Length: 64
Image (cartoon, rainbow, N blue to C red; front, side, top):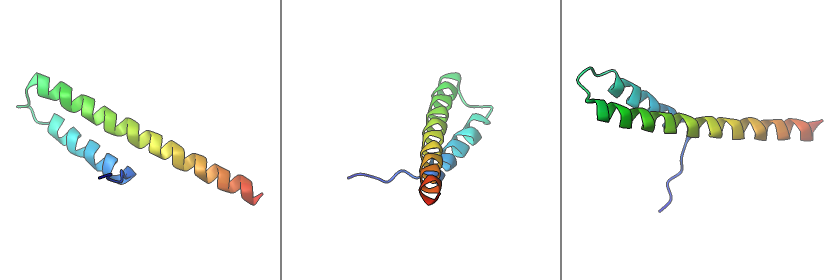
């Protein structure tokens, strides 16, 4: 079963991870794992944003 990945979901996930990282009681190894997850979420969101920008540019070029 394939789950649709949304830009907003990626940003929400990254924010949740950031909140987790703000916890001073979080162990170092958990912090590193959370950081890696957060960066992965942000990179995926960035790629999605770039694709959307490309699609918009293509549409603009077709209208000219």
